[in-house]
Image (tube, rainbow, N blue to C red; front, side, top):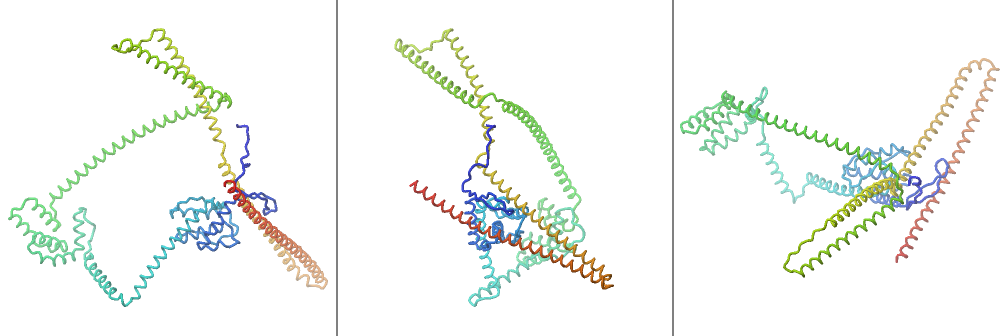
Length: 592
């Protein structure tokens, strides 16, 4: 199999038209044209024109320009900015083309596009994969335009209603305006308004921070509480709340009503918890919290912090132990995996080196092995059937002789037992040998299967061929670009040469002018030299003009040849299409 060489580019490709063409240097080359790609390209162009991208109708633009322009147009209709100009240069390099397509491909995932495409597919004009993307973008952009149209229409109606009111709607409009004005007044009435500003940092205690913040915004609350206090005169809890809020609003005006309330509670034999609670509230109002309460609170906080720190330490210790055990297990598994992988590589290397069997020997051996296994199974079935029949006949014979006796199995004699053991050992040895041979054959089959799988299939070969063609096109475009650079460089070099000659001539004339005008003889000699120089310049200009005319004529001839070949190509495409239709008709007639 290794000795047989294959040419991966000799397979025929379906729907592929091959014809001869002329490249830019005048050489005859082979041009491949996929009919299905051309059909998809026409469908893409029709879809873009139907969607409103009329630039796709221009004949002077390339297919790449139309495809990238259509994609960019659809994306920009969805209010997504793409840093691409819709007017491209005439001769783009491969790098610039791929950069353009990468910008488009980068935007598609943000639009949640279900189709994935690579930049080289757009640059290589893979119309089959570009077609569903174009259809999805056209549909998405049309839906987006409809939604945006509805939003703009609603916005226009709202703006119109703000400035123009019909007489039938004036009553509703005035009612709505009054409602909104009253609502804003209520919102402004209950909006928090800062009346004081605290100097210095906030206290460390959270409760003091809350009280200080409330005291800065509590003027409006006191007004609200004062208005509602007259309605609930008999509620002692609200009276104390009123005094508490008033004290928060102005701590300098501490009333004695809190003390009175505490005394009334002591007289009324309230429980101790209530007294402590009001004492704490009074101390908060005056800003003088007792040291005992503060110390007990700090001790409670410190105990909670210590308990949490201990629990965190225990949890960190457990996490570290679990992590260490997990890492040890991972290291053991890695070592075992490395050992097994090394053994497997050694065995595979040995098996790949073994070339003792040919394909024919392996097939014959495998066939004989299958026949032996089949014969063995048949013999075992015959022996089992014979034993069952023998036992059945013995049981029937015993039941006929003595129906009351129980059936007992007859033990084997030593000779029969020995013979049975020998046969069993031989059968086990035979099975072991067959398993070893089967293992060898399976390894050989696996080796040959791997070798066969390494040979590329039709799809892979077609993909390789397509990539090689793309690479050839890229190299050709790069060669064309380099050639243009060289031509441009040579032109500039000639311009520089002529300019330098002109400058040197003018300098020499300027240097010799005064001396030549000093006498008549020198002036005549100078004029004769000047006339010879003018004749030489005219001769050079004439040569350049003749060269320009010849190049222009050659360009016109090449254009005529190009148009003639384009006509031939159109005729060939039409004939090919007609041939395909006729072939399809013949196929349908044969099937019918």
